[in-house]
Length: 302
Image (cartoon, rainbow, N blue to C red; front, top):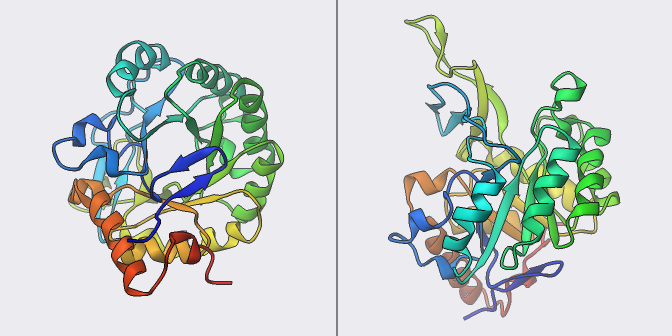
């Protein structure tokens, strides 16, 4: 059996397989399908400073080789998370990571500061694809300045491992990665969803309530692989790869493109036990190819 352990700065993962925020609940929902302790890290549903109701329905639409969503970060807020959710998940024997969203650098920082106080949450992942309400609604993550402003504010308030989730809806994602690295990000995860749209031609209207949404699933994998490769060659901090991973082969492709770890998202809806299957599949591939450690294949594609 190969050594599957990897490190994201001070965050030690028993294997490189994590779950993507918004696709795995708070972990407990999947306990009947997969041993949670065998997952390298569980990134829980997005959390904001204040409660959010999310967008109107319909929020999801199936597309060829993927899906669109516009859930709108529905959650009960960080105080509810700390008081009610954290006590239920703190003893799960893996890395429990909180995805943090906000509407201003200050709201991100305040939310992160509250989570910083939770002993058994070793890391957060910043969703910088949220709109900046002070700057016309443009997402923070689509400019170097916007992305850097969030990370700079959070870094002052949060003292554990800080992962920043990058938007693919940009001209040069490597520039964004460099900007957040310069402000103290410990790692970057990519890609978040691509903006897309689906139409009901009989009703002559979009399938989603707000017209557009985030596209995920197998259809985005080639884009995600290219961006992971670009970013891995642009920064010195660890890269977490995600986007269309369905099986161990997909995961290994991301590792070879430079990802230290991977996240599985949409595939959890198809097979709730996919994380364990991917982890076991990586191990089998490494054994079959005479690799003693998963680190031997990380960044194999130069």
